[in-house]
Every structure is written in C-alpha cells, then in structure tokens.
Amino acid sequence: MIERFYLKEYLSFKEVELDLKSGLVVFTGPSGSGKSILMNSILSSFGTNSCDAMLCESTVAWELNTDDAGIESDDVYIFKHIKKEKSRYFINNQSISKKAMGDLTSNYLRHLSLRDFSDFENENLLSILDNRLDKKNLNATKLRDEYGKNFLEYKRIRKELLSIEEEQRRIVELKEFAAYEIKKIEVINPKASEDSELLEIKKELSRKEKVLKSLSQANAIFEHEHNVFNALDLLNADSSFFSDSMNELRAIMESAEERFSMLDEINVEDVLNRIEELSELKRRYGSIEDALKYKEQKIQELAKYENIEITKGDLEAKEAALGKKVKDLANRLSELRHGEIDSFNGDLNRYLKELYLRDAKVEINDTEFEFFGKDEISVKLHATDLQKVSTGEFNRLRLAILALKSEFMSKAGGVLMLDEIDANLSGEESMSVAKVLKQLSGHFQIFVISHQPQLTSMGDQHFLVHKKGDVSYVKELDFNDRVDEIARIISGESITQEAKKFAKELLNLHTK
View (spheres, rainbow, N blue to C red):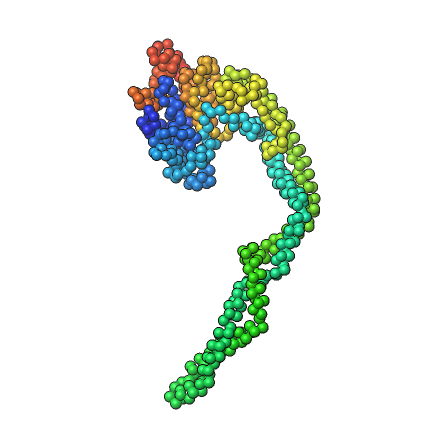
C-alpha cells in the first residue's frame, strides 16, 4: 500500500501531505477543486504519469525486485518525481529513469481509468480459471506444473531440431568450409609460441657477424692472462679471484661462439618466409594459439556434421515422445478447464448483475500449444466485442474480473486508482459499484474519486478536496465531517436536514 503522499507546488496546490490507510480511500469535493489533479500527481510520483509539480513523493512498503534497476533493496521505498528545469525520478534518493520506475511499479500500481485490456489477456483469464481449479482439484496444480515443464523441454528439443534441419540444408557447404579451414591451418602447421622463437632467431641472425667479430677481438685478453698471474705472484697477492673471473669469462664467450656458430646451419630466407606465414595466421586469427583453437573447433564441427543424422534421429524420437506427452497433458488440463468454465461464467455474470451490466459470454477455444496449454479464453459482453463497449461498461466489466480474481487471492494485490468510476450512474448502479469496490478493498488499496453518496459512504478513509480562493487543500474527514460532505453530494451546497439524515444513515450502515 501507499503509506504516505507529499505534494508541493502543483497548479492550485501549494502543499499537501496525506497519511494513507489500507482499503477503500475516497476523494470527494466540488467540481474544479483539484481531485483529478491530485490523483495525477500520485501517479506521477511513480513514473506512470507526468505533471509539473515541484515535488511528488510517495512512501510504500512493497516487496520490489530492484536488482535490475540498480536500486538497493529496502523495507520501505520512497518514490519521488522532482520538476525543476526538467523532470527527475528517484527511489530512496537513487536516480532512476521514468521508464525503469514505471516498469518497476507496474505490478503494484494500476490506473483503471485507462482503457487497458491487460485484465482480459489470455494469461490473466487462465490464471483466474486455474486458481479456481486449484481450490477444487489438487491435481490441477500438479498437472499444470508437469505440462509446463514438459512443454519447455519439448520447445527446447524442437528448437534444436530446427537448427539441425537448417544445418542439413547447408551441410555440404558447411563441411567443405570446415575442411578448407582445417587444411589451411594444417598446411602451415604452426606450433605454440613458434613465432616468438623465430623472431628471436631473426634477431640473433641480424647481429651474428657483429657479435662474432667482437668476440674475436675480445679473445686477445686470454693471451695476456699469464702476465697477470706473474704480477700477482710478485705482489704476493691471492690470484684466485682473477682465476675465477677469467674462467667465467671464458665460459660465457665459448657459449656465445657456440650458439652463434650453430646459426650457420640456419637459412635466413627460410626463417623470414616462416615468419611471414605465421604473421598471416596471426593477422587472420589474432595469435598462433587462437589459430590452433579455431582449427580444433572446426575439427569438432566436422565431426558433428558427420554424425548429424544420428543426432537428428535421437532428437526426432525425443520430440515425438514429448509431443505426445505434451498433447496428452494439455488435453487433460483443457478438460478440467472446460469443466470449470460454466461456473466461471456464472460467477462473473453474478458480479455483472450486481453492477447492472448485461450478461457476458466466456468461451474456451483451442489455440496453438503454449506454456499455459492449448486454451484461449474469450470474453464478450452481451455478444459485443470488448473494443466496442462503452468506457463505463468496460470499466465495470474489469471490476467484475478483478472481483472474480480476488476471491482466490492469498496476498495483497497492490494499488488500484479509479477516477470517477461512478460518474453518470444511477443510485442503484453506484451502490453496486461501491459494493464490488468494497469487496476488492480487502485485497487492494483503492483510491477513487467519487461524486455519489453510496460509494463515498463505504470508504475506509475519506478526503475532501476543496478550494479557498485559488488554492486547493486536502482534508481528512472525521465522522461528522463525512456526514456534512455526503449531505452536500446529495443536496448540493444548500444542505438540507433530510440530506444529513440520509448521509448519517448511510455512514452508520457501512461503518459498523
């Protein structure tokens, strides 16, 4: 539920703060006082509408899945719409786009004054029907779960099979391409890290002559080695350090001469050509290692193409078995639904009768197998397509569907917002709408603008929207204030004693 709403600087409103209760929340007031403006500002705080208020802020205690929106989860969420030069939206002071906020709240907040067909979508109608079955037949839940599991597996197998059939149409081309790619790499036959080793050899070859010449000149030091030993003996100095150094130097130079002499057996042109071949592979695949991985991938693909007929045969067998099982489960589920549809239709028309609407006709027709089965539910109001019924009839039919759904709801259903749903209705029609809304308020927090005493008297919380001069105010009414306001709705600005008496009787009737 929405626990608190705050509004600042929006048209005729300077500042409004509302502490809200669960159940049926009614807003009344003279025409032009700002009731629709207030409703619009509440919707704007959740990103489902727009307004030019400086600030719209709502506090809720919903169990939101905020991970995808990048918002930290919390027990209480504060939604804000701030308008300065441009609109900005926040949840718990974390910035969020209007669309992301609207998506996040769409399962919790619904504005029923819009001509929205979501209540009549097949998935929603089937869920209502299935909830009724679940209460009467414990096997319905198990059957539906088993169907859904097998349908998803059937769909996966079918998708895999279609992919193989598509591959088969291109199999010759794919096999030739895979073999060609493998051969192209095998001709060069690269080894891991071979390019690094060849580049090192090329580097050594480029400085071979210079290094050997330098070594030859440096070897002259050994011709004078004995003179150094003689001098050290004459000086009575320890010559071991010099002996160790000369031995180490001799080993280094001999090793270098041996390494560079081995390069005599290497053909420089062969090295350069090999480096060019490997460079071409690297340009194409990124690295030698990537080329070898690509080759292995193509070898595996070629093996798969060779075995595709075996794989296809196995999948076809699985598809046939799953298809048969899915069809059987769907038929059993459909049989249960057909057995319940008359009761569904009867209960819906019971609500419609209360709402002074013509009978509806609900039918189940076969459709393509989907996750929820093979059934499609259609609703017509007195044989008239829903697109052609009046807005008033449409909204009352939606209330009947919601009332039917609420009979089996196990938790709160969020917030419903209705703008003058009882406008232009007779007293009896208004009372019927009020009774259905009162039932729904056990599962939803409902905000409604009303101009009729019947609905107003049933409110769990009643706010008066009124103007003083050019400024609009909102006041929560106590029992006596409610009597006066309902009497005004009945008799107009000149309130009669009869109107007050009737208003008090209505309130006493519905506040017991």
